[in-house]
Image 1 (spheres, rainbow, N blue to C red):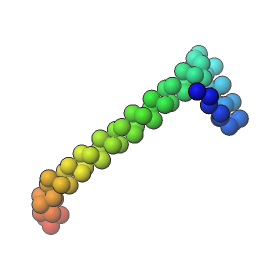
Image 2: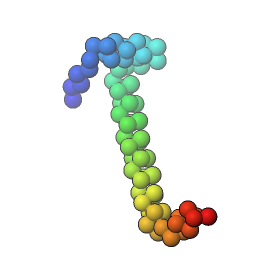
Image 3: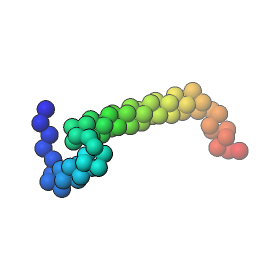
Image 4: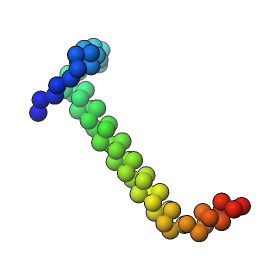
Length: 66
């Protein structure tokens, strides 16, 4: 896979990689993993909210009126 980055982002990655003593490749892998985990977590939360709204709708209505 080839990744084309804007010059400024590429420069920032070079600096970060040097500070962290790792390659840009390793940094990009970490970033990709973070994105995947964040999206997966968001999907889990949305599924949980859908479940609660579906199964506890009456309870939520009563709490709303309390």
